[in-house]
Length: 499
Image 1 (cartoon, rainbow, N blue to C red):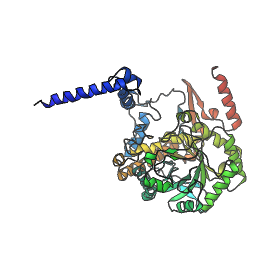
Image 2 (image 1 turned 30 degrees about the vertical axis):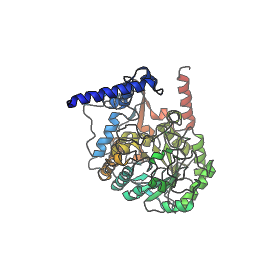
Image 3 (image 1 turned 180 degrees about the vertical axis):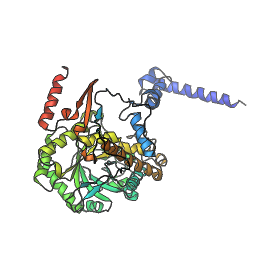
Image 4 (image 1 turned 60 degrees about the horizontal axis):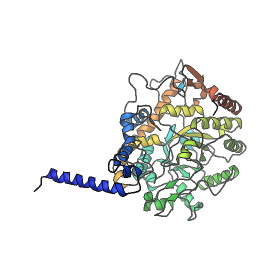
């Protein structure tokens, strides 16, 4: 009778021999055909590379899309822990692109100060206006892209804090409702939750969703940051019977969302449809979400708002750095402009056309800390939407597997085994903590600037490091008129080296 270790050696030797023989004759992988068995270690190293770099190799400031310091801030905020840093900042204070706030010589007193702010009112002249009490709320993330437990935790967390969350394009699910949080109902080109079989808009289905007490506002999604001009895809592996029912789609097929709305293809048509859904909702605030590539579209919108009372109550500006579960790299890397520039363009154009006081602007795109939210406010936003920061509060580790249905933290998957690890009760507390921590950080910055309200922050309160030893006022980099703004771009292009 052979000892156990001998059987183990025989098994290992047999597996090695079989693998080597298989590798020699297979035609799919060149590396392992040329280097049988040992070539397999190349693919193992490729799989282990990202997590090894994330935790061992890279510095705290070098990761993308979020650095380890940014993720750590979100984790600690979600857990209700102190977010003070020891021994000074790790951020290069002379690094080009770093935005600095200009501290007031006489700050607003913070002793016994409350973080409560005067609410930002969406649709003040509508039948059912909505008062927003937190400066940053939960951006659109669909049930389907996220797990049932993740959606439930987000909704519960929004209710605990007193904020709101967007439904995402996948419609209002049972878990959005069960969590009890206030909701913004997003209507994407796929019309999920309010569609006919052919994908066209169904008024009765829409009214049934929009009539829910938790739904406080509705908005049209024209585009999202990571993939403007392209519809979403929910792989058939994620299309459960439940998702099929909620979205009104077939099982066993990939769920493709169109890249544009069939009901309109210009600004007047969009406004007519926007008014239609606002009326069907019973007079709740209505808006739209878009990604900019310049000022032409938003100028046409601004002119409409200035001359009509039935325009959007809010505009969500998504930066090209916005995130999603899955996006083509060509669009994610090269389509659209950043949130910073888009907010400046939107704010400038609305002011020039006399429409700024008739609409609220919500900024969305790689906002994860109070400082990044405050910067967005200073550039022209009235409120912020955050997606990935709230995913961190749920336990996301930036594994970059959102598009595979294998998210190890149970956030972006429909796998029951992986989802079971995400406890909605405990995670909802972290969601609430994170929402309050972002708001607290913004209010702390507000007081340091000598101001009273987050909407008091403007470009004059900030400056940017453009090169080591040179700091420029943000009003110079982002002038308050479009003529001056375009002129700065011409000057910068002239300074670029020839191709």
